[in-house]
Image (tube, rainbow, N blue to C red; front, top):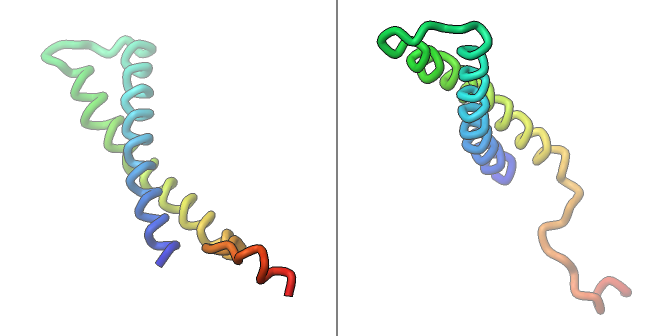
Length: 88
C-alpha cells in the first residue's frame, strides 16, 4: 500500500513539476526560434504543446521514481522500538 501511495504522490508532484518545466521550455523555445505571435500562436504552442508534454513526462517519471524508491526502502522500520526492549 505504501508503494502505491508514494507512486500516486510522485505522479502528482511530477505532473506539477513537469508542467512548470514544460512552460519554461516552451517559452525558451518561442524566444530562441522567434515563433510568431500572430493571433496568439506562440502562447497556444506553449500551453497546448509543451505544458501537456512536460506534465505527462514529469508525471510518469515522478511516479516511477517514487515507486522505485518505495520498493527499495523496505528496510526502514515504520516505528522505533522503545530503548529498553532493544537491549534484551
